[in-house]
Length: 172
Ligand code: AR6
Image (cartoon, rainbow, N blue to C red; front, side, top):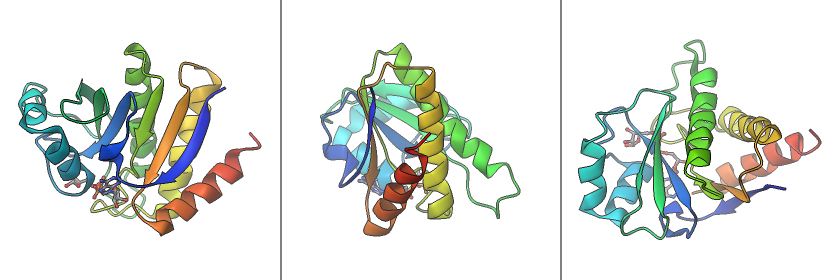
């Protein structure tokens, strides 16, 4: 059975099959976790990203991990929070679904997600973490390819929200 865990730390240090990047539609780097991943992976990552011609919100694309301990990086683009009436919840759920679907085609067994859209894109943390956990759980009901799913938290507030969401959905 797949294990789902919230952990605190820096996603770029994790020795997993794939880490997920909270990118922007250009896929050409940025700040936050995106900047950290590009710095740690080295310039070869940007070179491969340039070949991908961007990514739409809610979609996902994959590259190698280069100098990262992770073998792959799955780049997805979360929605910018605009009050909640602009399809944000569906688009955020799509980030998780499409990242996991892509991961299964690469036989990825361990995957680590950052809190997509919870930084500069401004998504309310409680809602975003519930969507993340609920979407992953639903996906796992029809797919048993994964050993571990990690939700990587860069601060205590996000960590506590993930713990609550995991508890809430653990009865499902
Ligand atoms: N490891 C794990 N989590 C991290 C790390 C890290 N090394 N660094 C930051 N976080 P953000 P977004 C957390 O802003 O909201 C970029 O410029 C951070 O604390 O990185 O989806 C892109 O290019 C927060 O909880 O992503 C886009 O333009 C979470 O990762 C835009 O930001 C996501 O914050 C995307 O915004």
